[in-house]
Length: 217
Image 1 (cartoon, rainbow, N blue to C red):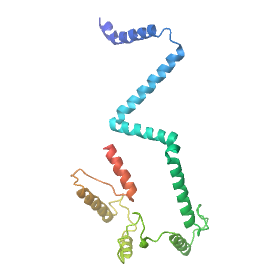
Image 2: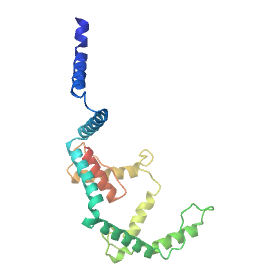
Image 3: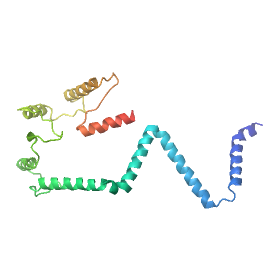
Image 4: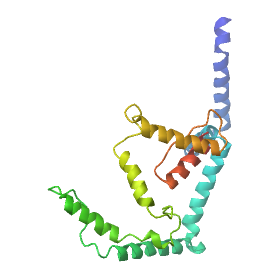
């Protein structure tokens, strides 16, 4: 009796297999293979949806749907034309600004350049930059609008030029500044004791990391 009770679950499997054989006895093998592949595909997708959760699965579906629409209907919607015009505009603008630079440094020099050569190159590159003091900038420069502000920033940066906040034991001062800047933002958003943050090098990276944190947590 013990051996029979242990075999009970397996008898269900064998009964199901026998019923399957009877039901699909006249089905061509090729169709059975296609059915098995389709079932395997659906199971894999279902497991993926289960792991991602409802919200992330919907986001993934919308992303794939938008990609298909852009691929097959981008021309009709004017998307491809707008993208080409934008690319051509960037190329034209950058080509015009860099027309004064005739040397392309795409390899490490065989001999190290002198201090004078490096400074000259920096000045040549600075000459093709737009002048932020004239305005007409779309949020790319925040210069304070005050006389002497650049000198003030340079003086402060010079004091901490050779530091690394990743090594708080050696550079406690700059680490403290980073922690205080994050705490200020946490307080602005009414964060609790468990709130934290990270200091980034740019606004775009900050937005991407904030959206990633929102998605993950």
